[in-house]
Amino acid sequence: MSITLRSSVGSHAAAIAFGAIAAAILPIAHSAEPQSLADFMVAICAQTFHPASAVEASYLADNVSAMTKMTVNMGIRPSGDVDSDFVAMMTPHHQGAIEMAQAELRYGRNDQLRRLSQEIIVTQQQEIVAMQLALGRPLPPPAPAPDQVPPVEQARPNSSRFAP
Image (cartoon, rainbow, N blue to C red):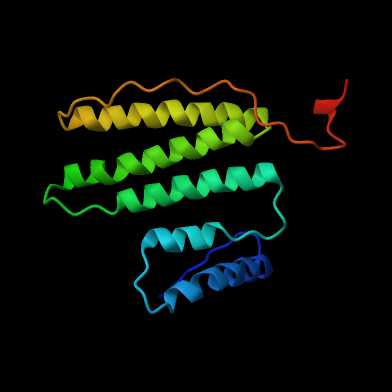
């Protein structure tokens, strides 16, 4: 297995990140049993660099789930039709972005990122529909608009959000 890691945060941070990823992957890579790509994704994404709060752990679990499902569903059997294969791979890719944006809406606190997440959900849904239409396929069932639920509250002692 070969891993290429590119980082703009500096070689020290990249080395630390690579070490954590390698520690997660090596036991799976050297396992006697064949492992799936999903197993690799879970091992990589489950690595934390500090103790996670309950909220962060829930957020990370949602993201691992979204990324694993996306990666597995992108692994299609080629059909011989490039356009059809493109849509077959891009649809779960877009759905993964939707699910990751939904996790940001559930757990994130940054209003700008929450608005961006809402836009991501809408545009990715529109692109899935456009790809289906381009192939003459029926539209997917209607989906609800991005939720407007406030993020999960996170106790932070110095946060003005919790000030009276």
